[in-house]
Length: 248
Image (cartoon, rainbow, N blue to C red; front, side, top):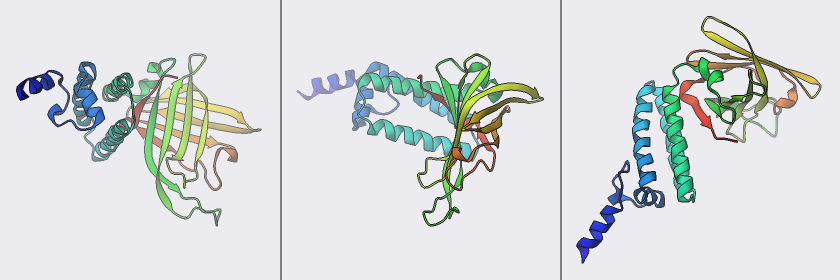
């Protein structure tokens, strides 16, 4: 009576990126039991290997591995139905393919869709808050984040820029608005913003280079930042820190 059971189990296992005979987690069993999700998982494994080869620098490789591990852990932790797992795997596949295929960051403003965008992350440090002092007391690891979407009307770039997030102990800053292209120099595209914020002015430049994007805030009201924080330095974002934003 054992053979028919083994044959049935084998017939329900599709070509996933791992050995379905060792599947133990709920998500692993879902992958092995669904041909669509299993196919996505196999393609995702191949795309991950290709993306890893596209970013050989040790710092980029370490960042990508950390982000992929966080994505896997989050996927396993969530109680997602099959359709949502399929959607999540599809989005991750698109993200890695887009990241690997985008060779020139200067093309981002031209490739943004009306309802989607990109998110870039740059790891750094922040000044840790202190309840006993207005001065920061220590450096902590944090992240700078830049989100870009196509603006309305066309020709404008909607941006959201935040410094020192992902750490509740950190004093952060954030600014958002619309930036307009103001010309370029050899190798660089520039988008400038200037707007009124609470009776003060926020202004700065987003520069697109082939392999990086730099954000410089030239002027900002203190209300955009926590106590003691400020846009005291530019943020540089690289291609390895690029991800797709979900549709709104």
